[in-house]
Image 1 (tube, one colour):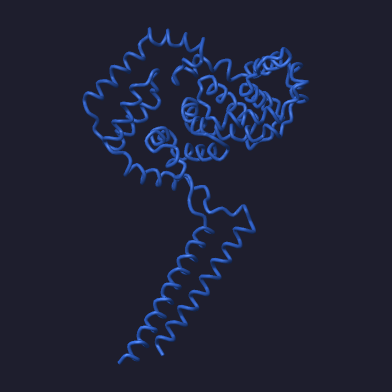
Image 2 (cartoon, rainbow, N blue to C red):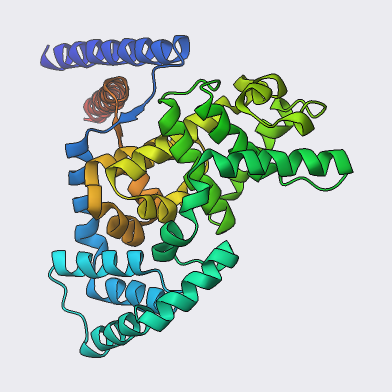
Length: 354
């Protein structure tokens, strides 16, 4: 009698779990907006990265990252200082020879002569800019509509002459100038889009755009530029007639989130982390991490890498938890029912044998 009651209970649990699994799966199939992962809150991002650092921020790992950054030319002092701050935060004592090497390198790179000569080289060739120089030596033109108008004009002249066109510079110039003219729809204000486009133009000159972001810009140009009208663009009004704004919207939305990173940290930090951004989803996750972590973002990005940092910005949705619970219940009840049937079969055989 007890065994029958147990099997009945297990059968009911199995049926309920199966129904729950089917219902949750049907909800996901019927509504593509229901995702297994949703954006984490700021507190959840902080807690998740702290848990990851507890395993990843070992003395050996921190020393290796600092040594690697120290060996670069030009040195990235934003990343170096972030790693040193992280070592201090985690109370990791660095070897004396490493701290001495950092101090010597700092004195060499920040001397008056080194600053003047390197800024002159940076102003002439943005590819030679270090992150701590670029905002001083290149930003005055890049952050104004002057640079955007010049970029569109260069592309128009090249098209008219049958020469190669820098499609990436053209795409970013269109977004920057289009944002100024408020003709591009995005999730932010025109000033936000313009700021994001300007930072991306600087990153482009420094070869800090990811291949997929470059491809996004190229796609926008191919699908959104009226080439016949482009050579005549000299003003915001001319631009409106020469582009199809919706083709540039995905790029504009991505650059809007880039400016969220700049606002939450610094322009230099946004430039440093831009290679992590492949698409609009990456830009949004990076912006969420920036708003949660603030000045600590760079050190965590350096040590954790893109995959773990972005994983910390997501959490399981209620739908995912419901599906997990239903599947777990289904598995346990099916296992229990199968075990009960096997026990019952064995007992019957033993009785027959006796």
